[in-house]
Length: 249
Length: 163
Image (cartoon, rainbow over all chains, first blue to last red):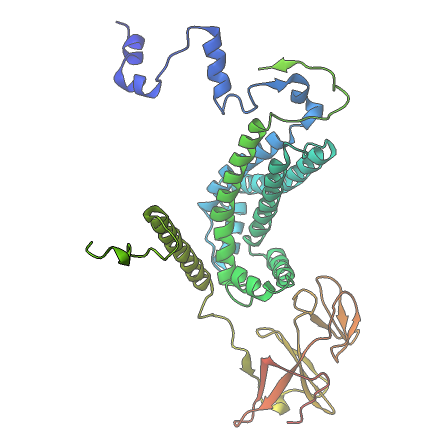
């Protein structure tokens, strides 16, 4: 018995890889189509909807950006303390001392800007292609919530460098939140954990940015993608190719 | 039972099954627990002790401020001014969105760097998006002969204090 054979027939291997390559083509394609990682689109999708001009891949780009942001953010967290004035020094250290810190920080920063931009374009694309109409109206609402979460992530991340720009942007932003009818002042107090932008505010924004909002966004994305499949796949522009009815697995 | 006229216990009440009773009781308990948890959570989010500067703070003796001076107390974000008619304290927090304003000696006005609001030394809005004049604050003389200002205590616009 060869080494390879012994390996692939071992109990551990068989526990990890529970079924080998299927014997028939039908089973092989089913394996791909049933796997969400190998086939994010619904099993049956019009070929025109897979073209660039149908969706401009904006949803997929947003998802990839979210992945990049999660990874680079996790790495940045290893050198960052959400305390005053350490946060500012950590940001500077990331820029000038930590190996590749400048690169990672800029990746995080530019991906964040890009994600806000792309998610917004995604919304516009769906709007102009009337892809929000039934049966996709529920997913439109999920999408709007995802846009708000993206903006929330962008805003909470803005405070973390703890520089003048961050400080005053959050001072201004939380004063805007204060203008909310009835609950405004309370909302500002809870958001800042006090009456002024300080230590508590930094910690609260950090927790929101690194735990609460990303979790909410990840769950929202899961629902969003599930609904795309459930509602019959992506909808591209209706019209130009309206009569062509090719189907691709 | 011996006396059949008495009927079964609870006959006059609306019929309720055991299952329905436990369902209602269970959901009510969950509801009460959820409301309690929400109230507890909201309460937890409100800090009870803040490590912010106190609203009342002391300056030097009145004589230490030269007449005509506009002095910005940065830690408490207050202008203290002394003119011929007396002392005045104005909040340095812009009434638009809360940035800290700066005194511009050349123009004899107070300007906000964020969105360009400008105020006169009376706190009146000269230009920009600020919706209200800068609030005037109470100025007091303590027993030990020092100036005290309380940022939490607003007074009518134009209230000048003779110390």
